[in-house]
Each structure stands twice: as C-alpha cells, then as structure tokens.
Length: 608
Image (tube, rainbow, N blue to C red):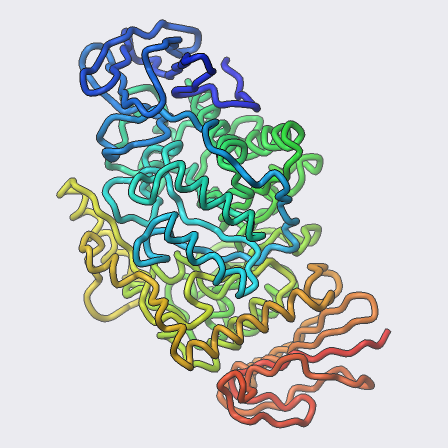
C-alpha cells in the first residue's frame, strides 16, 4: 500500500529540481501506460510498480509542458491528478511546478474558528470579470465590512466556463477560466496580507459526469452504494487504498501548496465508508501531521445533514475530528419564522420554537420525531462548542436551489432583512454571509452550467424542474445552460452607491463590529445562554453573557409592535436598534422592551 506524503505530493507530476520530473499514475486496469508530451506527443513508457501504480523519472517533461497518458495504446486521457487543464476537461494536462510561486505570507497566522466571520463567494459571479484577479480588487470591501474569512465555492476544473463548481472532474486542477493555480495562489497570498483567512469548498462525495474519465484508470467508484450522482466514490471496496490516498493528498495539497486555511467539505453525509477508520477521520489524522510539520493551523468544516456529532467529535473522543459543520436547521427555522411557507424540507420547522431550540441546542432534530422524514432523527450535541457550527440566513444552496434563485432581498422587506442578519450575527455560532447580502443584492443566484453533451444538458434541465415539485413554485425554471442565467447571477457592485443599499452595508458593518467588540457575543460559549420565545407574538429573547457582561437580544418577527419583557432589576442600554432611523427604520420607542415590527434591539448591561 502506498502511503500519503505529508511534505509533498506523490501523485501526478512533481518536479524535484535539476530538471527532473517524477511521474506517478494509478492505473491498475492498464497493461501498458505511456506519457505523451507536448503537441508532438513525444512518447515515454511508464514502468509498472506495486499496487497498480505506474512511474517514470524523466528530464524530458518540463514545467508548463502539456502532457497526457495513453492507456494500452487506445485511450488518451488527462492526468487524474492534473494541476492544470488549459484546454478544459477533455484536453491535455499541463505540468506545473508549484514551488515556483513566491509567497509573502510567512507572518500569517490562521485565526481560531471562534474569530471566523465567513463570507461565501462564487468566483465566476462575484465580479463582472469572474476571475481570481478581479476578486483581489474587491478584498478591501470585505475588510471594510469586517469579514475575517472568505469561503470560495469549488474551483476544481469543471466542464466549460460556467458552473457552481460541484460538477468538477479534476480535483487537483484549478479552473482555467478563473486564472488557474497561480491565480488562486495570488488571491490567497493577498488575502493573508489583508488579514483574511481563505476557506476552499471541496467535493469528496462525487465527481461530475462530463470529462469524468476515472473509470478508465481504476476502481475510483463502487456499485456497493448509490448516491444522488450515481455510484459512490470507492472508499471501502476493493482497490480503495489508492482512492483514499488520492483524496487525502488532495486535502494536504490545498493546505501545504496553496496555503489554504480551511476546507469546507461538501455533503459529507453522501460519503459512503464503512472502513474501520472513516476516510474523514483519516484525512483529519494526516492534516494533524501536516500541522505538526508546517507549524500552521488548518481547519476542516463539513456540510452535514445527519445531526450526528460523531463527525465533529474529537479524535480522542472516538469522533472523526472535523473542526466544524454547517447547520442548515438554523437557517430553515429562521426562514419559517420570517414567513417562509412550510413546504418541502421547511415542512419540518414550526418557526420561532425551533429557532429558539437551534440557538440553544444547535440541532433542532436531536432525537425527536421528524414528520418530513417519518422517523426519529438525530442525536444531541451537548458537548460540542459554539465554534463547531456555522449558521447563515442564506447561502449558495438555499438561494440557488430555489427555482428562481431569489435572494432574501426579493422575499422579505428591508426591515426583515436586517432582523434576519442580526439573528445570525448574535448567535452563539460562527456566522456566514453569502456574497452581496451585505448590501441587499437584488440579482438572483441561479443554477448554471456550460456542458457540451446535449443529453446531459437535457437531463440537467429535467432534473431542475423535478426538484421544485415540493415547493409548488410558479413560472418557468431558468435554463441552467443559458449564458443569460449565469450573467443574471452576477453581483451588481454599483448598487453600493444607492442610498438604501449603502444603508444596509453600514448596518452589516455595525452588526459585525458589535459582535467583535463585546465578549458576551464574541465568545461562543453555549452554556452562557438563555432563550425565551412567544409563539403567539412571534418574538424571541436571546440572553448571552460573559463574566459580568450581559447582552439581551429582543427580536420581533411579527408585523406589530411588541413589548418584550427584559430580565428585571437591571439597567439595560441599547447597543443597536435595527428600527433606528440611521438604519432606514422608523423612529423607535425609547421605552425598554418596546420593539418595532420586524426588528431587533440589542441591549447590554454590566451587572454580576
């Protein structure tokens, strides 16, 4: 069995100096493998090694040369561990020497997760140009906002020029239309110079359909399990050792070679692995070895809908050791509280009672009966800390998986937008914004692709229409293949010059400042929290404290003014009132506990 390398990649093409390239390919199904170099396709045979690997050491392959592999004199394929695909997923790979980039971030220190304020963005729609270089030009905006970490949707090479990124088929290659490996490195290096951590979304649960040539090389997939995307990636069947190594080294590469600070791992509940050591646990074990090797801190965050803390429990507590996870249930409860219809997966959420439960327990379904699933679901996460959970009022999934891709700004009024933003920011969890929400972006974020296979395009179109049956949405589903769908999803930066959007941005700035400034909000101690709600009035009182500092957040989700009783015997001062005129609201009442419709007041006192 080939073991993962901590200090360098062992797969694909690696340059060792003195003009020497080491080439390693796993292709146990092949009887013969040749390396083809350049347009002239200089042919060099690889040598068979143990466990289905093929190897070659040569001075003929140079940095930036294109190359491919010829399997059994029949199939010419790009390298599964390719770092660059200048001509897309069907073209030749390009050899890169990642050691050539001149980093300037030696003084950078990755913040603790407790200090992360995430900002999720999609490179293709974040700027008009849709590149890493253009994103660099917008980083000062994020610094001014108060963001501490950007989270980039997947950049692994996908078909065409337009894609969310979850159809990637070459996990080691950085999308060529975004700016490739060097463009991503420049973005990360600049982020660090500006005090921003970088989290990268990676997909270890499936590969996209177009340009997926992995079956030609070996048993990357297994028919033991099925996923929404077909056969599962082979993490526990015959030949799985090489597949596990492939993904372990991928995670290590992003941290070590690209200086990424955290990985957000997509839909880990779709990873099928009944090995004695789960693949996520093994990735964590090797990341810990990398931390010891480099002296840098790296974070692993999972998207997970199983409500099972084994994923985020520490290694020494028989967990997989993942540092944190998204909790969609907070989002669902918040949306229903704000008036979203209880359809589809929202049908499991009754609004403010479940929002209060999520503030207190993280998971809403933690061993209680789920009507949507028709079974008891989840288990309690009592021993998990607040900095192990990421919450949000919107993200790429929750916006883009609506039929029309409407953002919150198109679903609720200005006052409710502010209340929902604050509900996230005052939580005892890590908050995340979705790009553009800080100014109330009005463009949708819709699902888009640019496949070349006509049958696949039609299948995606039909799949999108089928997906929205539970929501009973009206109108036509936007064509995911149309370029206009992609263009419609781009941010409108010029909105920041308009008063209403400028006010929203200033409000978000203040919210983030308040969260950072006051220990009762900044420190994510789930034990120092009390929550009360009134289902009839649709109000919620969140009380958090740290030492002698107490903060009370009075939230009114109703359309009428409400009197929310504050804890007695204490003098409460207002830190922020979303209904204040300076935030575009009406002149609020000054009496303690009087909260305007669809608004929040954050109070503070310093009594032991």
